[in-house]
Image (tube, rainbow, N blue to C red; front, side, top):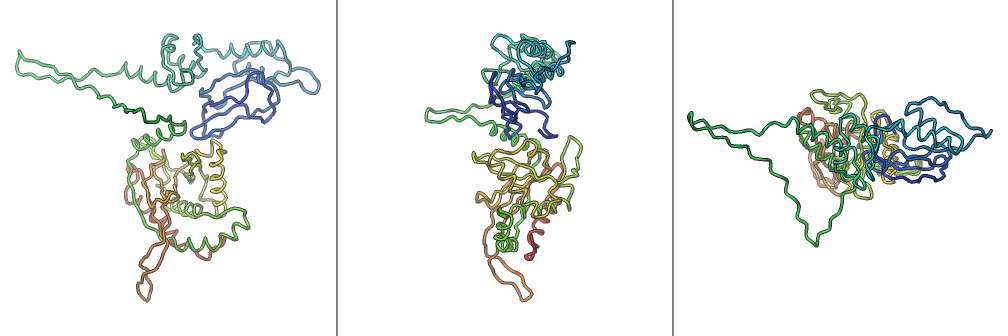
Length: 443
């Protein structure tokens, strides 16, 4: 799933117990952040056991299912040690069996017993191994766990449910007593006044004519990330108007030959991405992240590229080591990621590890915007719509009015670590690279 991915949520089983599975056939679907992926089988066989349920969070490396595989060419079965195995060994042994019948069932049962946590399933209520492990580690009793309200399917307790319970339980234990105000007017007059309680949030009134639409999983994630970012970073914006007439004319001149030779379109996005990558090399303190009181200066320049999806949501695939790509390589990377984003074929690792983000608000007709920083980055650049406008043109013979192609660059940055000078100089450098575009450049 990629080096930067540690866990995933199981969203759907595509096969049921007893179903025949072919190698490379999808068995289940998982979700990490904003990307949904299918997990294929590595072997031919029959699905014997599911070890996780829908909405369970699975750590990378955990066994999620046991598949009974058929015997090899000699028709014999592998022998399995009778000693008590570790949970990992038991699951591996059960998966590796090449026969059928009671021996397979015996090893599956051994695997299940070896991985059984002290917490038990209560009646129809199922607890995932991860939830059981958290309960055991946090000394949560069976009665406590049974009393937690689950937000998962059929009221199932999810990882977030039990972690929220642990956090609330800890806060109750350490919650300070309400402050009091003491007025001392004399030895005989002492009065205490309790502090005002926190006001509850106002609920939203829903009329009978209103339609209630539940947020999608991706919508909930985006909402959470946006609120978290505004609460984390001190957002400040700088705006620069950029003359991109040279870029416009150059692209019109070469895009036909490029499409004929490469079989794909040359858009403005890779041109802008190249200019941003150059500016980040000039101003490396824009290519940073904040970790508490520390600043992490990134070695690699990994550009996030906001891409719109058919359902209206946005996703941010990442162009790794963007500063090492020439314009042709940048164009190939941009087109590939954009196409696979629209087809929901991005891999989980391809939306991880970004160090700076670019979003094209001009696609929707906006001339400028104030984008929200993609945490833990410290800057994001919004590209406005390119407009044909009258402008003053300076020449050795004097100034005159002409038609130029212009756009606004809107730079949002984290004022905790990026001051106005750096934020403004960076976006101005991007504009300088675009305005100085070589109209005779070859690609």
